[in-house]
Amino acid sequence: MTEITNFRGEATPQSQATRVEAEVSALIQRVGERVRRARERRGIPRRVLSDMSGVSPRYLAQLEAGEGNISIGLLQRVASALDHRIEWLVGEEDPWNSDALRVADMFRSSSTDVQQAILRKLNPEPAEALRGHRLCLIGLRGAGKSTLGALLGQALNIPFVELNSEIEEQSGMPVEEVMALYGQEGYRKLEAQAISRIIATHDSMVLAVAGGLVAEPETYNQLLGHFHTIWLKTSPDEHMARVRAQGDERPMAGNPEAMEQLKSILTSREALYGRAQAQLDTSGQSVEASLAQLLALIEERKFLG
Image (cartoon, rainbow, N blue to C red; front, side, top):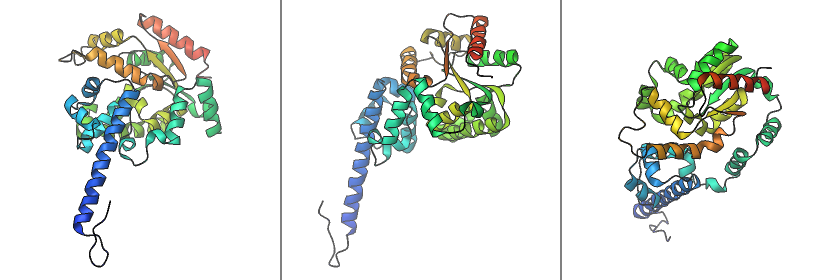
């Protein structure tokens, strides 16, 4: 672009404004392209991303076409729904050409043995020493984390803690109010702080965390490094049925595509949940049978020494 200058060779206000406008246009184009690529990489239809993020399909279409001047707040919703960091969408460096992101993708898709070997190289302190006797149950809502976690704590005679309860105690308000007041980013910060505090105060415990924690790389890595993690999984139908059995009709209320959305979330997070040290499928199992299998798994893997 040819720059307009005054007689002293300085850029004029008009040329500066033109340059800024071009930079803004390039940013909007870049964000739109990255949102589209992130959505396609996870196999999420645009209408499902709309339901997950609360951003209208029309706005998402404009955004991906480089025509939507989206607010930071809405972009954060889109990034969270894509299990993405917002800086990956707006930074000048292409995240898919980033060595760090490529390494992270390869790590997530590698076997548990390979992951453990890499962690041993990066962290010379024995992983078992860092994890102590701490157990953590991960997975989507309805997998049985709260129910089995409480029973597991009783059976092993160790404390059971739900991370959201810890966050509520820390913030002095229900999680719903935390989200309304501070947004997703504020909630994630409190989540990370709560985990750090739990690690510092508990050498032996059972922890249950919210299903979306795995989308925050730093927090999830801290969790994997300091807890023996177990992914509780079940079928989409059972996920939905168990949530409704708890008296929560929100997943289905006014949302005919709730099941499709749930399946998309499961698909997009499968590789992340798969980083857990162990898995237990509770599909079609009674609570008693699942607890017995969970205790056997912990004994077999020698998670508690």
